[in-house]
Amino acid sequence: MKKLVLAAALTAAASTAYAGNLEEPVVEAPVVVEETQGTSAGIWLPLILLVLVGAAVAAS
Figure 1 (cartoon, rainbow, N blue to C red):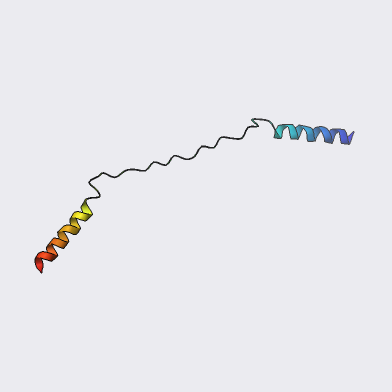
Figure 2 (figure 1 turned 135 degrees about the vertical axis):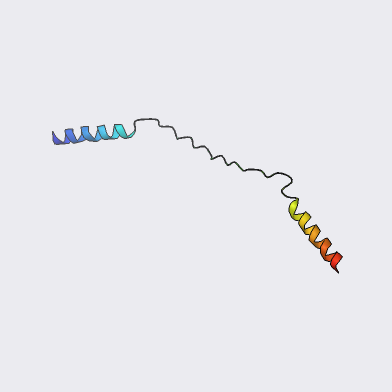
């Protein structure tokens, strides 16, 4: 009788372990949003360098 009760308890525990969806979960890749810079942001450094080189040439 003890074995029958133990078997029933194990069967009940095993059936609840498999309850639910048996398909693999769909894991979506995270979406990475990058902010773009304006086109005028990249022009400042070359302009400053051009002014500095021009000032160095004019001073010599």
